[in-house]
Picture (cartoon, rainbow, N blue to C red):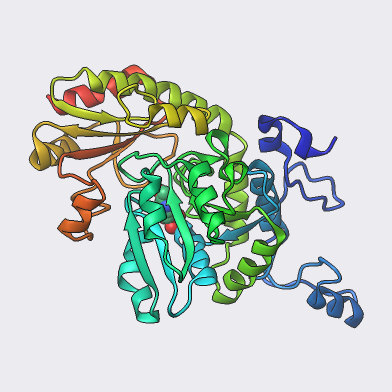
Length: 391
Ligand SMILES: *Cc1c(COP(=O)(O)O)cnc(C)c1O
């Protein structure tokens, strides 16, 4: 059976399996920096691409290839390119598609550093950025210029939970001949497959749901076509944004339980979202699974479930946010997300504190916003913890 024809959960377990001739049940850690060639001719073939033999770990390694192939199968893509971190993946995409005089249109509410590098580093290389609320596709259309070389979308967005219509934005991008890249970190391919909806590139911080155990930092890019793959791969390997084999091993192990982890966390999140919506200290809740979410219908159309990320506002504003952070006992007061443990953070004073006040307002990061990544603990315990912290 070709693994591409198997169900998603079977792919999680078996996709990418590397045959090492020893019968290893899982792909081991090939902790080697370099690989021996059988002969001068074999070495030449590896370098010319006539053989797909391994050369040097920055360029490729069996443990890493196993993970790349697995995530590519899960995203229905051509192939995967792994990175040292999510930011390594994101900067690889920026560097592949943007040069001096070029322009990018990006979602305004994105992972903090995804925007911060475009505002603080890329202007030095004469790269220009426009940030818009991509939930309104007309704003994307109006922001496209003759020198726009990349459209970059994060959906659901971090931390506002705004949702962008991937099909619509892909259509717009292709009318203008511009590639669309989607950061799929918040969903993972279990809940959303951007390439199936027209995106050209999908990327992940695998630090989050894909690895899921808060013990690795890692990134991945998957392309829809060979053409994009061939453009991106040498940028990553030459810039040295590569993954390490031991990182790949842990992520591949975490990936196997993606479906059951997300199912459980999502089940908990739905209950927590309803609890928050009814709580007197809470002003508003943004969760794609609630009918009150402005893009609830779109979420149902392009995501197979609402996920485990919730944003909510405290009536007491910034002070109440800080207070609550100091009172939680079960939830860890920590950035990051998508792990088996519940994490809570206050973006205005933490992840997005480096953004200017104006950028924060534009990106919808209000002082009262609390971000919750719901874990797989007993939901009664999560709710009890939040309740006592808000009292
Ligand atoms: C964490 C995160 C990133 C960055 O990933 P790292 O692995 O921390 O470099 C990018 N996008 C989103 C949505 C994230 O949550």
